[in-house]
Length: 399
Image (cartoon, rainbow, N blue to C red):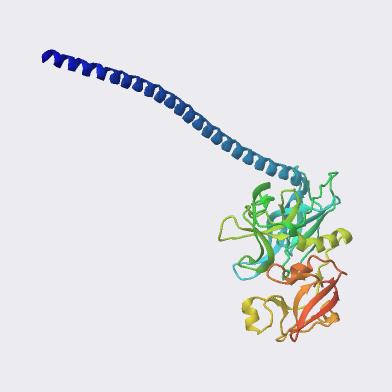
Protein backbone atom coordinates (compact mmCIF):
# COMPACT_ATOMS: atom_id res chain seq x y z
CA UNK A 1 0.00 0.00 0.00
CA UNK A 2 2.62 2.27 1.02
CA UNK A 3 4.69 1.30 -1.96
CA UNK A 4 1.79 1.59 -4.22
CA UNK A 5 0.91 4.67 -2.60
CA UNK A 6 4.49 5.68 -3.19
CA UNK A 7 4.20 4.62 -6.78
CA UNK A 8 1.01 6.47 -7.09
CA UNK A 9 2.69 9.41 -5.59
CA UNK A 10 5.62 8.89 -7.91
CA UNK A 11 3.29 8.54 -10.79
CA UNK A 12 1.55 11.66 -9.68
CA UNK A 13 4.85 13.40 -9.31
CA UNK A 14 5.96 12.21 -12.69
CA UNK A 15 2.67 13.26 -14.06
CA UNK A 16 2.94 16.61 -12.47
CA UNK A 17 6.52 17.07 -13.41
CA UNK A 18 5.96 17.59 -17.10
CA UNK A 19 3.10 19.89 -16.33
CA UNK A 20 5.32 21.73 -13.93
CA UNK A 21 8.03 21.88 -16.50
CA UNK A 22 5.56 22.81 -19.14
CA UNK A 23 4.28 25.54 -16.83
CA UNK A 24 7.81 26.74 -16.13
CA UNK A 25 8.60 26.88 -19.84
CA UNK A 26 5.42 28.78 -20.43
CA UNK A 27 6.27 31.26 -17.69
CA UNK A 28 9.69 31.71 -19.20
CA UNK A 29 8.16 32.10 -22.62
CA UNK A 30 5.60 34.56 -21.29
CA UNK A 31 8.39 36.34 -19.46
CA UNK A 32 10.35 36.67 -22.67
CA UNK A 33 7.28 37.85 -24.51
CA UNK A 34 6.54 40.24 -21.63
CA UNK A 35 10.07 41.56 -21.77
CA UNK A 36 9.76 41.97 -25.48
CA UNK A 37 6.45 43.78 -25.01
CA UNK A 38 7.89 45.96 -22.27
CA UNK A 39 10.89 46.64 -24.41
CA UNK A 40 8.67 47.46 -27.37
CA UNK A 41 6.33 49.52 -25.22
CA UNK A 42 9.29 51.37 -23.73
CA UNK A 43 10.59 51.98 -27.20
CA UNK A 44 7.15 53.09 -28.35
CA UNK A 45 6.70 55.32 -25.30
CA UNK A 46 10.16 56.72 -25.83
CA UNK A 47 9.33 57.27 -29.46
CA UNK A 48 5.99 58.83 -28.53
CA UNK A 49 7.60 61.13 -25.98
CA UNK A 50 10.32 61.91 -28.43
CA UNK A 51 7.71 62.59 -31.09
CA UNK A 52 5.75 64.79 -28.72
CA UNK A 53 8.95 66.49 -27.69
CA UNK A 54 9.76 67.12 -31.33
CA UNK A 55 6.18 68.36 -31.89
CA UNK A 56 6.51 70.73 -28.94
CA UNK A 57 9.89 71.86 -30.20
CA UNK A 58 8.44 72.27 -33.68
CA UNK A 59 5.45 74.16 -32.26
CA UNK A 60 7.72 76.42 -30.21
CA UNK A 61 9.99 76.85 -33.19
CA UNK A 62 7.00 77.73 -35.38
CA UNK A 63 5.75 80.21 -32.80
CA UNK A 64 9.19 81.76 -32.61
CA UNK A 65 9.33 81.95 -36.38
CA UNK A 66 5.90 83.64 -36.47
CA UNK A 67 6.93 86.11 -33.78
CA UNK A 68 10.26 86.66 -35.48
CA UNK A 69 8.60 87.14 -38.87
CA UNK A 70 6.07 89.58 -37.41
CA UNK A 71 8.80 91.49 -35.61
CA UNK A 72 10.82 91.64 -38.82
CA UNK A 73 7.73 92.85 -40.70
CA UNK A 74 7.08 95.65 -38.22
CA UNK A 75 10.78 96.55 -38.18
CA UNK A 76 10.82 96.65 -41.99
CA UNK A 77 7.71 98.85 -42.08
CA UNK A 78 9.23 101.22 -39.53
CA UNK A 79 12.45 101.51 -41.55
CA UNK A 80 10.64 102.03 -44.85
CA UNK A 81 8.01 104.50 -43.61
CA UNK A 82 10.02 106.27 -40.88
CA UNK A 83 11.86 108.70 -43.21
CA UNK A 84 8.47 109.93 -44.50
CA UNK A 85 7.18 110.80 -41.02
CA UNK A 86 7.93 114.14 -39.33
CA UNK A 87 7.26 115.58 -35.90
CA UNK A 88 5.31 118.84 -36.01
CA UNK A 89 5.88 121.51 -33.34
CA UNK A 90 3.39 124.38 -33.22
CA UNK A 91 3.24 127.76 -31.54
CA UNK A 92 -0.25 129.25 -31.51
CA UNK A 93 -1.95 132.32 -30.10
CA UNK A 94 -5.19 132.22 -28.16
CA UNK A 95 -6.92 134.34 -25.56
CA UNK A 96 -7.64 133.58 -21.95
CA UNK A 97 -9.61 135.54 -19.38
CA UNK A 98 -7.54 136.99 -16.57
CA UNK A 99 -8.55 137.43 -12.93
CA UNK A 100 -10.70 140.44 -13.81
CA UNK A 101 -12.39 138.72 -16.74
CA UNK A 102 -10.46 140.54 -19.45
CA UNK A 103 -9.18 138.54 -22.45
CA UNK A 104 -5.42 138.28 -22.50
CA UNK A 105 -3.29 136.84 -25.33
CA UNK A 106 -1.73 133.50 -24.48
CA UNK A 107 0.99 131.67 -26.37
CA UNK A 108 0.67 127.89 -26.49
CA UNK A 109 3.03 125.11 -27.52
CA UNK A 110 1.76 121.84 -28.96
CA UNK A 111 3.01 118.94 -31.04
CA UNK A 112 1.79 116.38 -33.51
CA UNK A 113 2.89 114.34 -36.51
CA UNK A 114 2.93 114.78 -40.27
CA UNK A 115 3.36 112.71 -43.44
CA UNK A 116 5.62 113.83 -46.28
CA UNK A 117 3.67 113.73 -49.56
CA UNK A 118 6.19 115.20 -52.00
CA UNK A 119 9.92 115.73 -52.32
CA UNK A 120 9.39 119.49 -52.57
CA UNK A 121 8.01 119.64 -49.03
CA UNK A 122 4.22 119.10 -49.00
CA UNK A 123 3.20 117.57 -45.66
CA UNK A 124 -0.20 116.33 -44.50
CA UNK A 125 -1.35 116.47 -40.87
CA UNK A 126 -4.53 117.01 -38.85
CA UNK A 127 -6.37 120.31 -38.75
CA UNK A 128 -6.30 120.27 -34.95
CA UNK A 129 -2.49 119.94 -34.98
CA UNK A 130 -2.19 123.38 -36.67
CA UNK A 131 -5.39 125.15 -35.53
CA UNK A 132 -6.52 128.64 -36.40
CA UNK A 133 -4.21 131.06 -34.57
CA UNK A 134 -1.07 129.08 -35.41
CA UNK A 135 1.82 131.54 -35.58
CA UNK A 136 4.82 129.27 -36.09
CA UNK A 137 5.40 125.71 -37.31
CA UNK A 138 8.59 123.66 -37.32
CA UNK A 139 9.04 120.06 -38.41
CA UNK A 140 11.66 117.57 -37.34
CA UNK A 141 12.80 114.91 -39.80
CA UNK A 142 13.45 111.32 -38.78
CA UNK A 143 17.21 112.02 -38.63
CA UNK A 144 16.65 114.84 -36.12
CA UNK A 145 17.02 117.75 -38.55
CA UNK A 146 14.74 120.67 -37.66
CA UNK A 147 13.19 122.68 -40.48
CA UNK A 148 11.80 125.95 -39.20
CA UNK A 149 10.50 127.65 -42.32
CA UNK A 150 7.16 125.91 -42.69
CA UNK A 151 3.88 127.43 -43.91
CA UNK A 152 0.31 126.25 -43.43
CA UNK A 153 -1.10 125.85 -46.95
CA UNK A 154 -4.61 125.38 -45.68
CA UNK A 155 -6.91 123.47 -43.37
CA UNK A 156 -10.49 122.26 -43.62
CA UNK A 157 -13.12 124.26 -41.75
CA UNK A 158 -13.96 123.47 -38.13
CA UNK A 159 -17.34 122.09 -39.19
CA UNK A 160 -15.79 119.75 -41.78
CA UNK A 161 -15.76 116.07 -40.82
CA UNK A 162 -12.36 115.69 -42.53
CA UNK A 163 -9.84 116.79 -39.91
CA UNK A 164 -6.92 117.58 -42.23
CA UNK A 165 -4.41 120.34 -42.99
CA UNK A 166 -1.45 120.72 -45.33
CA UNK A 167 1.97 122.27 -44.74
CA UNK A 168 4.80 123.35 -47.05
CA UNK A 169 8.49 123.34 -46.12
CA UNK A 170 10.08 126.47 -47.60
CA UNK A 171 13.69 125.65 -46.69
CA UNK A 172 14.78 122.01 -46.73
CA UNK A 173 18.33 122.88 -45.62
CA UNK A 174 19.73 120.64 -48.34
CA UNK A 175 17.87 117.60 -47.08
CA UNK A 176 16.19 115.11 -49.40
CA UNK A 177 12.60 114.55 -48.37
CA UNK A 178 11.16 111.07 -48.84
CA UNK A 179 7.48 110.96 -49.85
CA UNK A 180 5.38 108.22 -48.27
CA UNK A 181 3.91 105.45 -50.39
CA UNK A 182 0.13 105.85 -50.55
CA UNK A 183 -2.07 102.76 -50.53
CA UNK A 184 -5.67 101.91 -51.32
CA UNK A 185 -7.67 102.13 -48.10
CA UNK A 186 -10.74 100.58 -49.77
CA UNK A 187 -8.93 97.23 -49.90
CA UNK A 188 -8.45 97.02 -46.14
CA UNK A 189 -10.38 94.35 -44.29
CA UNK A 190 -11.16 93.96 -40.60
CA UNK A 191 -8.33 91.93 -39.07
CA UNK A 192 -5.64 93.23 -41.43
CA UNK A 193 -2.32 94.08 -39.78
CA UNK A 194 -1.68 97.82 -39.37
CA UNK A 195 1.11 99.93 -37.90
CA UNK A 196 0.79 103.46 -36.48
CA UNK A 197 3.79 105.78 -36.47
CA UNK A 198 3.90 109.12 -34.73
CA UNK A 199 5.33 111.61 -32.25
CA UNK A 200 3.83 109.97 -29.18
CA UNK A 201 2.94 112.40 -26.39
CA UNK A 202 4.78 115.09 -28.36
CA UNK A 203 8.06 113.73 -26.98
CA UNK A 204 8.90 110.38 -28.51
CA UNK A 205 9.59 110.82 -32.20
CA UNK A 206 8.57 108.10 -34.65
CA UNK A 207 7.09 105.77 -32.05
CA UNK A 208 5.85 102.57 -33.68
CA UNK A 209 2.82 100.60 -32.47
CA UNK A 210 1.14 97.68 -34.19
CA UNK A 211 -2.28 96.08 -34.18
CA UNK A 212 -5.12 95.21 -36.49
CA UNK A 213 -7.89 97.06 -38.24
CA UNK A 214 -10.74 96.57 -35.77
CA UNK A 215 -13.55 98.20 -37.74
CA UNK A 216 -14.50 100.84 -40.27
CA UNK A 217 -17.30 103.31 -40.95
CA UNK A 218 -17.09 104.64 -37.39
CA UNK A 219 -18.46 108.06 -36.42
CA UNK A 220 -17.17 109.79 -33.29
CA UNK A 221 -17.40 113.16 -31.59
CA UNK A 222 -13.86 114.37 -30.91
CA UNK A 223 -12.55 117.38 -29.04
CA UNK A 224 -12.33 118.83 -25.55
CA UNK A 225 -14.48 120.88 -23.18
CA UNK A 226 -13.97 124.00 -25.29
CA UNK A 227 -14.94 122.59 -28.66
CA UNK A 228 -15.91 119.36 -30.38
CA UNK A 229 -16.42 118.05 -33.88
CA UNK A 230 -18.11 115.08 -35.49
CA UNK A 231 -15.78 112.83 -37.49
CA UNK A 232 -17.28 110.28 -39.86
CA UNK A 233 -16.36 107.12 -41.73
CA UNK A 234 -13.26 106.39 -39.63
CA UNK A 235 -11.08 103.31 -39.37
CA UNK A 236 -10.93 101.83 -35.87
CA UNK A 237 -7.70 100.16 -34.78
CA UNK A 238 -6.25 98.64 -31.63
CA UNK A 239 -2.77 99.90 -32.54
CA UNK A 240 -2.00 102.36 -29.75
CA UNK A 241 -2.61 105.97 -30.85
CA UNK A 242 -1.51 108.49 -28.23
CA UNK A 243 -1.58 112.24 -27.97
CA UNK A 244 1.00 113.53 -30.42
CA UNK A 245 0.28 110.72 -32.88
CA UNK A 246 -2.35 112.93 -34.54
CA UNK A 247 -1.52 113.53 -38.18
CA UNK A 248 0.69 110.46 -38.45
CA UNK A 249 0.26 107.53 -40.80
CA UNK A 250 -1.66 104.31 -40.31
CA UNK A 251 0.22 101.86 -42.51
CA UNK A 252 -0.56 98.46 -44.05
CA UNK A 253 1.75 95.44 -44.31
CA UNK A 254 3.13 96.76 -47.61
CA UNK A 255 4.45 99.92 -45.92
CA UNK A 256 1.72 101.97 -47.61
CA UNK A 257 -0.20 104.74 -45.86
CA UNK A 258 -3.89 103.81 -45.69
CA UNK A 259 -5.06 106.22 -43.00
CA UNK A 260 -4.39 109.47 -41.14
CA UNK A 261 -4.33 108.95 -37.36
CA UNK A 262 -6.83 111.35 -35.86
CA UNK A 263 -8.33 110.44 -32.49
CA UNK A 264 -8.25 108.06 -29.57
CA UNK A 265 -11.03 106.90 -27.29
CA UNK A 266 -10.58 108.72 -24.00
CA UNK A 267 -12.59 106.25 -21.93
CA UNK A 268 -11.09 103.04 -23.29
CA UNK A 269 -7.76 101.40 -24.03
CA UNK A 270 -6.42 100.46 -27.46
CA UNK A 271 -9.19 102.12 -29.44
CA UNK A 272 -7.90 104.63 -31.96
CA UNK A 273 -9.36 106.16 -35.09
CA UNK A 274 -7.93 107.17 -38.45
CA UNK A 275 -9.35 108.85 -41.56
CA UNK A 276 -9.21 106.41 -44.51
CA UNK A 277 -6.77 107.71 -47.08
CA UNK A 278 -9.34 107.31 -49.85
CA UNK A 279 -11.47 110.03 -48.25
CA UNK A 280 -8.50 112.40 -48.51
CA UNK A 281 -7.26 111.59 -52.01
CA UNK A 282 -9.25 114.35 -53.69
CA UNK A 283 -7.66 116.95 -51.41
CA UNK A 284 -4.21 115.40 -51.73
CA UNK A 285 -4.34 115.49 -55.52
CA UNK A 286 -5.56 119.07 -55.44
CA UNK A 287 -2.78 120.24 -53.12
CA UNK A 288 -0.06 118.39 -55.03
CA UNK A 289 -1.30 119.82 -58.34
CA UNK A 290 -2.01 123.41 -57.32
CA UNK A 291 -0.14 123.95 -54.08
CA UNK A 292 -3.33 125.03 -52.31
CA UNK A 293 -6.20 123.40 -50.49
CA UNK A 294 -9.45 123.35 -52.43
CA UNK A 295 -12.23 121.37 -50.77
CA UNK A 296 -14.91 120.17 -53.21
CA UNK A 297 -18.42 120.74 -51.94
CA UNK A 298 -22.09 120.58 -52.92
CA UNK A 299 -23.52 123.30 -50.73
CA UNK A 300 -26.30 121.46 -48.90
CA UNK A 301 -27.38 121.12 -45.26
CA UNK A 302 -28.02 117.44 -44.69
CA UNK A 303 -28.37 114.74 -42.08
CA UNK A 304 -27.11 111.17 -42.52
CA UNK A 305 -30.09 108.86 -42.34
CA UNK A 306 -30.47 106.13 -39.73
CA UNK A 307 -33.47 103.95 -38.93
CA UNK A 308 -34.62 106.40 -36.24
CA UNK A 309 -34.20 109.53 -38.36
CA UNK A 310 -35.95 107.92 -41.32
CA UNK A 311 -38.84 107.01 -38.99
CA UNK A 312 -38.92 110.51 -37.52
CA UNK A 313 -39.25 112.16 -40.93
CA UNK A 314 -41.41 109.35 -42.36
CA UNK A 315 -38.97 108.74 -45.23
CA UNK A 316 -39.19 105.87 -47.75
CA UNK A 317 -35.51 104.86 -47.30
CA UNK A 318 -33.34 104.42 -44.22
CA UNK A 319 -29.95 105.33 -45.65
CA UNK A 320 -28.73 108.36 -47.58
CA UNK A 321 -28.14 112.09 -47.12
CA UNK A 322 -31.41 113.90 -46.36
CA UNK A 323 -31.40 117.61 -47.26
CA UNK A 324 -33.15 118.95 -44.20
CA UNK A 325 -35.83 121.66 -44.37
CA UNK A 326 -34.50 125.16 -43.72
CA UNK A 327 -36.20 126.29 -40.49
CA UNK A 328 -34.81 129.75 -41.03
CA UNK A 329 -31.58 128.55 -42.63
CA UNK A 330 -30.97 127.85 -46.28
CA UNK A 331 -31.00 124.14 -47.11
CA UNK A 332 -29.22 124.86 -50.39
CA UNK A 333 -26.41 127.46 -50.44
CA UNK A 334 -27.13 130.15 -52.98
CA UNK A 335 -24.90 129.87 -56.05
CA UNK A 336 -23.50 126.51 -54.92
CA UNK A 337 -23.10 123.45 -57.18
CA UNK A 338 -26.25 122.00 -55.58
CA UNK A 339 -28.15 125.19 -56.34
CA UNK A 340 -26.97 125.21 -59.95
CA UNK A 341 -27.91 121.53 -60.36
CA UNK A 342 -31.44 122.11 -59.02
CA UNK A 343 -31.27 120.15 -55.77
CA UNK A 344 -34.09 120.90 -53.34
CA UNK A 345 -34.78 120.55 -49.65
CA UNK A 346 -36.18 117.14 -48.68
CA UNK A 347 -34.26 115.48 -51.54
CA UNK A 348 -32.50 112.31 -50.41
CA UNK A 349 -29.10 111.66 -52.00
CA UNK A 350 -28.67 107.89 -52.08
CA UNK A 351 -25.61 107.57 -54.33
CA UNK A 352 -22.68 109.53 -55.72
CA UNK A 353 -21.75 107.81 -58.98
CA UNK A 354 -21.77 104.12 -57.96
CA UNK A 355 -21.07 104.64 -54.25
CA UNK A 356 -24.05 104.19 -51.93
CA UNK A 357 -24.40 106.78 -49.18
CA UNK A 358 -24.75 104.88 -45.90
CA UNK A 359 -23.18 104.47 -42.47
CA UNK A 360 -19.89 103.43 -44.09
CA UNK A 361 -19.85 106.19 -46.71
CA UNK A 362 -21.11 109.59 -45.62
CA UNK A 363 -21.82 112.29 -48.19
CA UNK A 364 -18.84 114.34 -46.96
CA UNK A 365 -16.39 111.45 -47.05
CA UNK A 366 -17.40 110.39 -50.56
CA UNK A 367 -17.05 113.96 -51.81
CA UNK A 368 -13.57 113.99 -50.28
CA UNK A 369 -12.53 111.31 -52.76
CA UNK A 370 -13.12 113.75 -55.61
CA UNK A 371 -11.40 116.95 -56.71
CA UNK A 372 -12.67 120.40 -57.55
CA UNK A 373 -14.06 120.53 -61.13
CA UNK A 374 -14.98 116.82 -61.10
CA UNK A 375 -18.45 116.03 -62.43
CA UNK A 376 -20.40 113.48 -60.41
CA UNK A 377 -23.78 111.84 -60.87
CA UNK A 378 -26.13 112.00 -57.90
CA UNK A 379 -28.92 109.49 -57.47
CA UNK A 380 -31.69 111.17 -55.50
CA UNK A 381 -35.19 110.44 -54.28
CA UNK A 382 -37.65 113.31 -54.72
CA UNK A 383 -41.29 112.72 -53.85
CA UNK A 384 -40.62 108.98 -53.76
CA UNK A 385 -39.27 108.93 -57.34
CA UNK A 386 -35.65 108.25 -58.22
CA UNK A 387 -33.76 110.75 -60.37
CA UNK A 388 -30.19 111.23 -61.52
CA UNK A 389 -28.59 114.66 -61.50
CA UNK A 390 -25.11 115.62 -62.75
CA UNK A 391 -23.23 118.12 -60.59
CA UNK A 392 -19.87 119.82 -61.22
CA UNK A 393 -18.02 120.19 -57.92
CA UNK A 394 -16.57 123.55 -56.94
CA UNK A 395 -14.18 124.72 -54.23
CA UNK A 396 -15.76 125.32 -50.85
CA UNK A 397 -15.77 128.98 -49.74
CA UNK A 398 -12.87 129.82 -47.46
CA UNK A 399 -14.84 132.15 -45.19
